[in-house]
Amino acid sequence: MSISAEPAANPAAPRIQATADVDRSATIGDGTVVWHLAQVREHAHIGSHCVLGRGAYVGPSVIVGQNCKLQNYALVYEPALLEDGVFIGPGAVLTNDLHPRAITIDGTLKTDDDWNMVGVIVRRGAAVGARAVCIAPVTIGRWAMVAAGSVVTHDVPDFALVAGVPAKQVGWVGRAGVKLAQQDDGIWRCPETGELYREADGALSRVEES
Image (cartoon, rainbow, N blue to C red; front, side):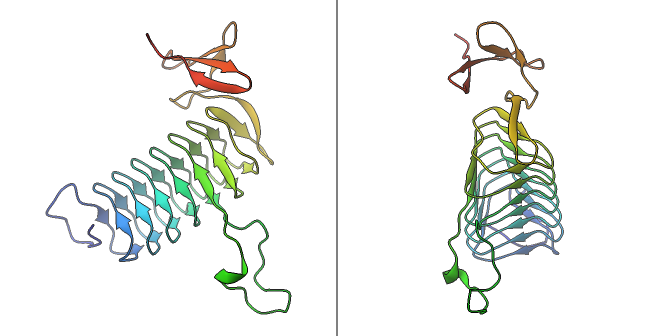
């Protein structure tokens, strides 16, 4: 990787603004753009063709897949895992501590050895809306959608649309991110793409074309 702010000789190389803070042990994939004031901590891995917006934060050893977007001031704390095609909206937070405290019971400042980090997993194609908070440990399923301002405290199924505080499922979304319309016999249809999905036992799966 290159963490130079100068124009890259290789047009596929990552582009990192001079005002971004990228640790030299981090890995940044080809074609990725890291904008003003973003911070990527030590040993983090950012895949190819990602966008990290102004002020975005990626914690130590966090893994971000390919074609992901972390919008302005998104905070992704270790040990989060983001699969390919994930969207994290402006000001969204992926936490890592179930019992946050600055000090131990004897009043001394906590160190990394005094707490157990837990992470958020965001599966392929899922989206977390602006200012949503995901309370670790939770998994956001494939192509799921977390509405803006929600607080997620439980796992989110594939294709589920969740909203509220705490977040509850309010529908299904397809791969295009559009809320699905219910048809007959457990079939749901995407109004935008026409893709069909089948619901069974509380789970949704795409009906593959034959």
